[in-house]
Length: 383
Image 1 (cartoon, helix red, strand yellow):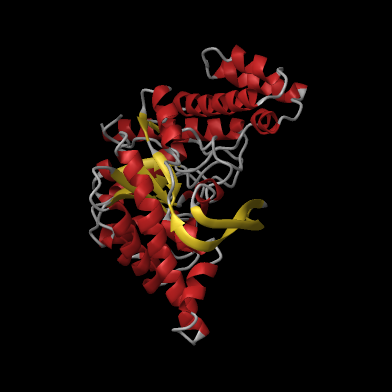
Image 2 (image 1 turned 45 degrees about the horizontal axis):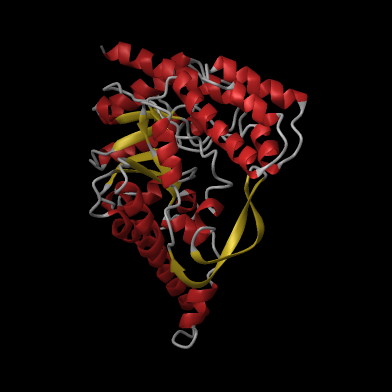
């Protein structure tokens, strides 16, 4: 891994249509078959012909599982070919970030689909009983990825605040009804109780299972944290995440998705002492013009620096909501601008604003490739 500006993805990648259809047991179209063949060749995926055979095979549980595994291999190879230094499987094993976690946990009951954003949906669950972690959820993903790459492997998964915020809270509200009459106080206390129970009884056991099996880097994803800005909410999250991650010999990064006011998260968020890196969104709010003296999308970097955090920054340098591929020269400018503000370029990791799951693999590959080229140009500028 380079000393300056290592590159990573911080969210999920789209599942290829051949993976979606194949895992459902639906017929594969000629176009989807050609797509699998094209990327197998382009990414130099060893043995990809076996995937093509699977796509032509009669449906069975073994065929479906094989297709899912090949999808993960393709995602790993795409990240490697694009020049990333830290990789994972693009979340090809998972249905959706929230659902993939809570469906394995006792106490949650799914009630239906709701829209999250960008016409994407997830199955919302209600907490109907005491939460109980039952078995490792992401360990198989990590071990599979580790077997298929020599790069640094990171394990991302959904954090306690988002699990709490995206769930109905039947169980903990019912427990408090006799002791708290005021509806607002009831909801507030039940929310807090659920948050800490998720941290203690779900997130911490999962982390323990990963770390005990060799995981060195865990990324906590908290998209809900930026939708509920407020000092009290952030303080509750910090207390909960500190309980979940304290005492582990592991690197922890925090990915907080889009916010109109990241400043509202600080300085309280810095009290999460074991979090060493904050991966935020910057490029989406920045100008795409080259030569800008003041890059407005990167004001949060200055805010972090003023607080003297000394934390790493996962610097979003490409916009995940636009098919246009940012020139490597623009990526270079954004990196060097942030490095100048921070003063220590070693604190900067380079990534897209969020996951590229809403982009095609062609756009994803080209954006990541331009990102890694821009990072190399930035390194050369400081050499």
